Image (cartoon, rainbow, N blue to C red; front, top):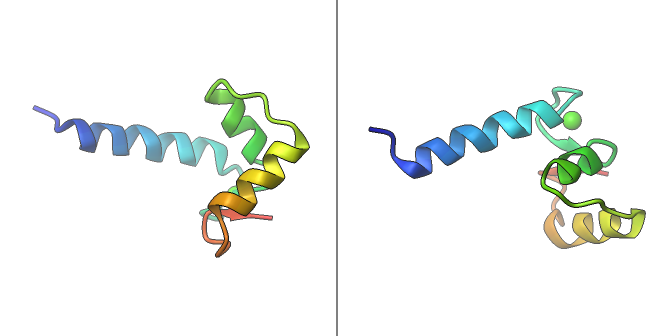
Amino acid sequence: MYDRRVYLSIVLFDCFKSYDKSGDGVIDRDELPDALRFAGINPSKEDIECIIKLFDSNGMIIKG
Ligand SMILES: [Ca+2]
């Protein structure tokens, strides 16, 4: 029986890999809109800038 958290981690990892098109281990600024659209969000350029500022102050997740 799968632990729900393990399952969600696998789904999230697969999702991340599919949007990390350059394969560098981070979601680039250019890759972020497609990932958000997959989640049902149609981001504006201002949304993208806001997300990067709010969630990636150290540059480890999103490469700007
Ligand atoms: Ca990437």
